[in-house]
Amino acid sequence: MIARNGQGYLQQGLGAADLFTYLYFAEALIDPLNPNWAERDRIFLSTAHNSAVFHATLAERGFFEHSRLETYTQDGSELEINVSERLGPVVEATCGSLGQALSVASGLAQSAKRQKRAFRNYVILGDGELQEGQVWEAAMYAASNQLDNLCLIVDLNHLQVEGHTETVISMEPIDKKFQSFGWAVKVIDGHDFNALREGFEYARSNSNVPTVIIAETTVGKGIPFLENLMSHNMVLPADVADQCLTYLKSDK
Image (cartoon, rainbow, N blue to C red):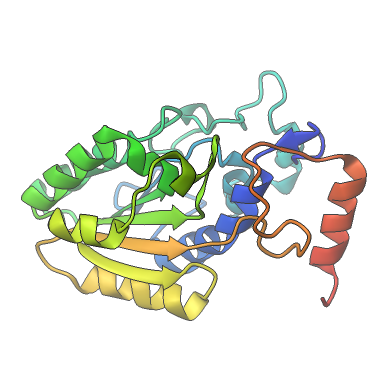
């Protein structure tokens, strides 16, 4: 998908692939045959530019045919470089401006509690987004309103457009910051499915507090010559893409 354009958000997608896989295939209560199901769990992609892995996940989960991935970023296609509601109900909110999804999800979570509805609300947020003040306003609001049906997943890959997050604005200790805001916190290896399972079980076990799962991930995960290579919007020639795909399809 990315090689067709010659560049794109490859490193983030490889790093978050395990998070998307577990959330969409093992955790969230969703129905690809009925994406408008009123009691579905809601998933918000705050890092809307991380669209290649998002669209690939939806195709794998059965929300649309794999052939549709060939239209990714083409003029007129609903599979945009920044995920938007043009794709349909599977996109709960357009979050192209970073830092907004937690606010939207908090409002929906509060509405669900008032209506005594059981669906849960998940937000995938990039660690660079934590530099946005709106995230922390939403964090205060969610804790103040005891939104235990809200689960935030921070994709802690240490990458943002300017480079390594800690060279831009130091945000550590992230776990203690959320704890001080009144959240339950779980720090996990974002590539370990057992750790992911424990993290989501922990989130569902908490009462009267929202939960944040801080998932430590590696950009470029799965391709040795790309792992930990800090490239926000990677130039990807076709021959390099072929090498990547060959490696992923091999027995390693």
